[in-house]
Length: 70
Image 1 (cartoon, rainbow, N blue to C red):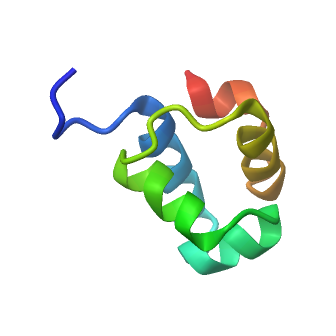
Image 2: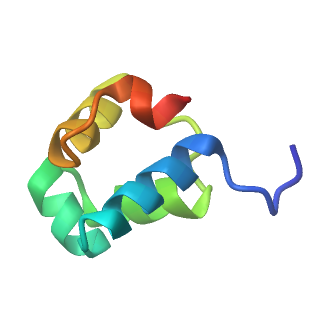
């Protein structure tokens, strides 16, 4: 995978967040994760977030973890 291509996790989180009209800051607050964590995941800097982080983000986005990792 090239460094320019975002992981499907990053793309899925960003797409769902935008569908819900949430800022990265708002998502981080809803998910109780650090703002920097959301930024790093979406930018691809953190391509493999922990399952716990994914679970929190999925809950905030009202989707299952499987929707984020497919």
